[in-house]
Length: 253
Image (cartoon, rainbow, N blue to C red):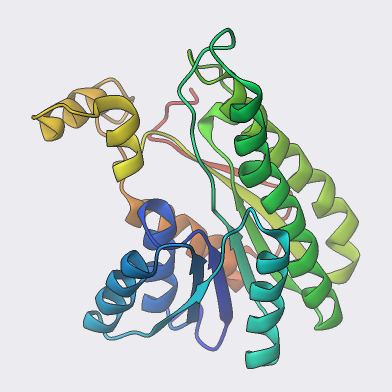
């Protein structure tokens, strides 16, 4: 087990990609903690992990409330004596063009996608620096480096996360704190289906058709993003920092 004994926290871990990472961490032997707002969805994650022979623990937290976010990160470290791996995954999408975007859209996306990731990285790094090192993984997006219609605000937030992570990796390298990004491509999640196919009756077919446009001929799964996160969190990646791992079926090509 590649994460045996490691204390891990996934912010935004109740569903979708975050849930896939929590389940993957638990499967690899980590103390898998995850934060989010939806207690009912969290219970489903805990149950699924237990059914797979692991353990996961839910930490209630609204990542847009910096006091709650700080308390969640510090609380995990206090309870377990350290924090080895932090994943900043909480985020949202607004599917509007530049002309349609509003000030409220801007505030909501930057508060969660950028501000929460920035301060999560800062507070996680403070703990890791004091404890001799660790791994922080920020979830960016294919939209951080590639333009998509109706994603001007979302792309701006994910580009900010990507460059913040690279600069922070330089700041924290002397402390053995590694900071890397994962940029998922088209992954089959409730969020994807809601943004692209809300109200459509045959979503499975539409997802398959969307995947057929990708170089590898299909959309990704949350388990595949989880596998990438396990790698970056593990000692296998101990000489990797400031990297952006495209997990996108070749879409960036």
